[in-house]
Image (cartoon, rainbow, N blue to C red):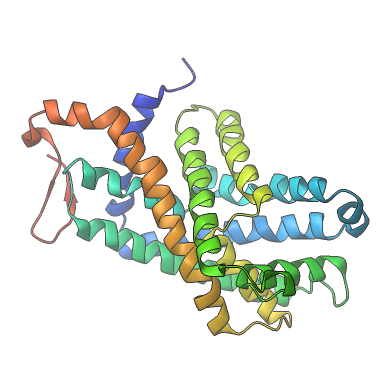
Length: 291
């Protein structure tokens, strides 16, 4: 059989937390820098293609959203197939062993912190090196206009956003984005071949991007890239008016709708029946160990 059932995916997804925490600090950081760069490159491609078609956007805004969404997932596909760590998928995977009493909070926070930092470095590197230094969005181009417009929308400085509860809206969009991203990671585990994994990833990731939801790792690229290209956005605005709310929303969405939901559905009763002595444990340093 070429597809795992949801109950089997739950076990594999939960066990992936051991793999993440098993990396050394340096290795996990490098994987996370690659992950942040891959997501950034996917977003860069999406903006170049969708944003570089102003007539299409003017006459078919829905089609523009679809093209933006359809091209973005290449970054997440590279992470899963090629190897890379993303903070948002870790929001669902890492808490599952915690819910199963297989680990303490220390390993969860360790992985979250290192992956978040690495993703940020990867996003900033791509914004400076592969966007600003290459001139891929020339001055006055439709693609550059789209890049800056997206960033300004994300920090809530456009005129039509003046009356919005911007923090709350960004938080909720963050929840929705990471529900889809974590479902992409979840569904990728179901497939045993590359093509199946690509399709499983592409559908939910395309969906959240077309919706215009908020993904903190993607925003670690697009807003700094816009700032470097001359957008009237400060670094403080980037952090306080977008990144904090998007990150919190991503944590809640990934944990609540995927990690917690599927633990409750598929693993909770099974864990209650098992002798917890069979489980992996936590050493005095708070690291995951397997018996």
